[in-house]
Length: 453
Image (cartoon, rainbow, N blue to C red):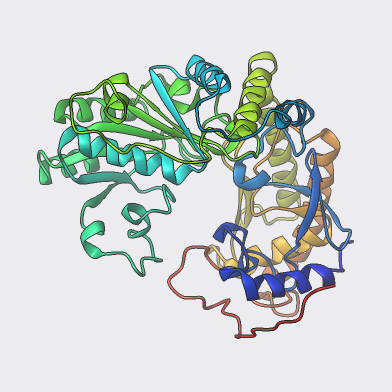
């Protein structure tokens, strides 16, 4: 039973003094975990991580879905180790950049060119900029899906819109996933103004209805609009060629990241030659500042990417994730049903990208009950805001998780029976990562200068 988080808590407090939010990614923040139980991690191997207090966990979420082969995966680590001795960053391209581009384009149908960067937001923003330049328009239609970029054009549409000009937000309009009429309406209302349509072709919880993606493709063609697929999550988790390969619909541009480096920082913008060349030297049009980053071609991440491609071509990590994910969902859902609370806690979604739902005694989604479930899983050696799995999760890992979940669900049922988490949950509930105010997890100001030992 994990019940000692003292060192993690000390380090987390110090992080809050030095790093806004106490983490460099909002989704990794302490407010996403039970109070006093936000582990600060020390290392990971496979699907197991260890924190600074010596607690071990079967981890899910796997680096915000960026790790599909497992932490410190041997062939990737070895490829990186071999490249390290050659240097990392130079004033001219390396042959490795060419080989990595060839590898990438061999996987992605319909993409003629690719440019590498370091994070997904850079790629999606570059796609929007390119679409605007190619069409001479400014409006962008985005699907009602959770996240596309940290840049103004998207963050201005969220609750955390402080500091973003409303003139930027005014150029963004939304349509509903699997609702072709909602997109058609936007094209009617903003005739000749929409530069790009941006969406994830599928999500953990939503598969495209028959004809939906094909309909989006046709609307974009009919209106001279650039179609952009966000493949950050679907790439290397749905297939190595992304959702576009699964569903047979080719976008004009696609944006990649996360699992393509198995945790190493790399992203990509790929697309049709006539668009991508607008950022190159073969165009007579005004040039687009597409992607130009110091660390985009850094050698270690490209080596890691090439090693990932080799694994995906020679093995079946996606099949492994889907089989393990199915076993996990079946096991946890069976435990919930046996306790008579299957309507309150359930594991749902694509097997390689599972989430769990948590509802209160009245059947409403509840952050308090979610936090109780997270708390009880942490105590039993399971870490994760979801059940997003990797190919490194073994049968033993899955069984440990099912057993831990069954015990956690017994506590959950007590809360349902009493109609409250009071007396069972220590501290305040978690809160949405993207919210306007720090409340309900606001911290008192404490500019302590004490260094942890």
